[in-house]
Amino acid sequence: MRIKKGDTVEVISGKDKGKRGEILKVIPKKDRVIVEGVNIVHRHVSPTQDMPQGGIIENEAAIHASNVQLVCPRCDEKTRVGAERLENGNKVRKCKQCDEVVDK
Image 1: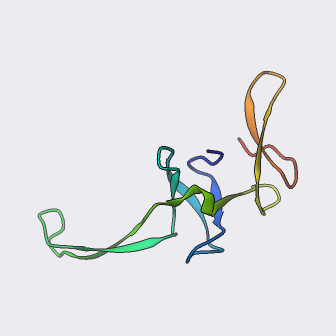
Image 2: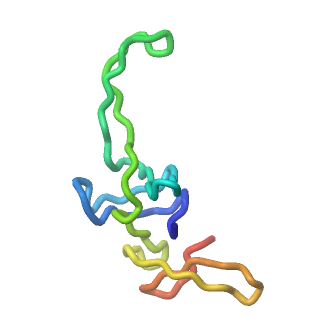
């Protein structure tokens, strides 16, 4: 996967198309990601000791990684990601739009 936890991404398809958010969790085995504020689902919870009130809880659900694109920190546009090796041997991700290194 070419996106990592902490990256800012934009949703490119589905009910939340156009929304941006930070990746909270990456699930590589299922090729899915959880994005902050995207794909909100409601869960009905009965009262317990931890939550005496009960009620409806809103959580982010996972979406497929192919439905999001990385937002370049420099040009602030959604972009494809390329990989390149530096002189010291480290592998970094690069923005295909502005050719800038995405990794910090």
